[in-house]
Length: 74
Image (cartoon, rainbow, N blue to C red; front, side):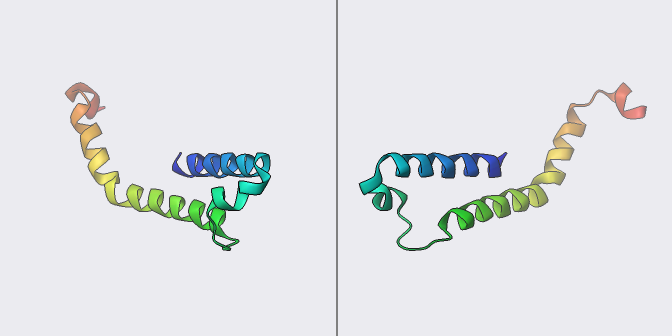
């Protein structure tokens, strides 16, 4: 989900840059870095993976606490 939101934002940036031709460089703010879009999405993916790795046990524990006792035995 995190990566898809990042990719959607990058696509919106691209469309706006195409529509406002003269202001494209100022809007994108890449400062000449041609891999800006890819690095933004890679960092979004890295952040999502780190969050999953660090919070998954806590999440599983919370779900287990919500489960009724009768379901836990089966």
